[in-house]
Image 1 (tube, rainbow, N blue to C red):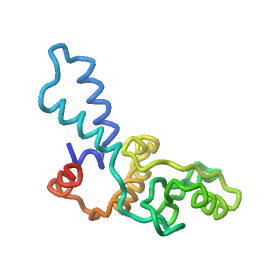
Image 2 (image 1 turned 45 degrees about the vertical axis):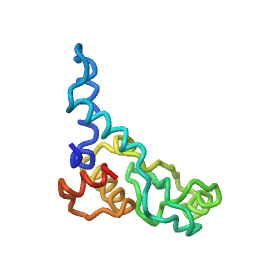
Image 3 (image 1 turned 45 degrees about the horizontal axis):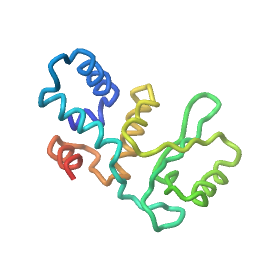
Image 4 (image 1 turned 30 degrees about the vertical axis):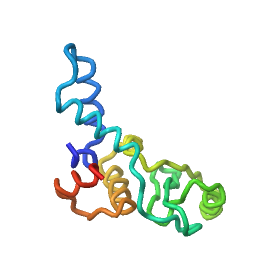
Length: 145
């Protein structure tokens, strides 16, 4: 399940909701583990430091939406919660529509195409300082920290 948090988060949420709706007798061990895993995905703290101030860990990534629906996002476009740091990225956007999204696994559901999901997953791996190719063991360690 830990690897699926990166590869198919939306399916895990769907499955969790299905388990919740069908569960008459309570939660089994797998159901409880999935619930805990989804909660941990919302509360992980990135390790990458804000490029704008150089002091605090990043909390957001900014997405520049193009007129054609395409977007730009990357480690350069990350910042902490300070308004000054967000403003620096707004100025860099030079009038383009910019949106700040939190580094929470639920944010991945905002991206629909497989290619877009992969780009966001790769960004998450970078800010959480994970290897490009995750193994089950690395993913488990990440969520057990």
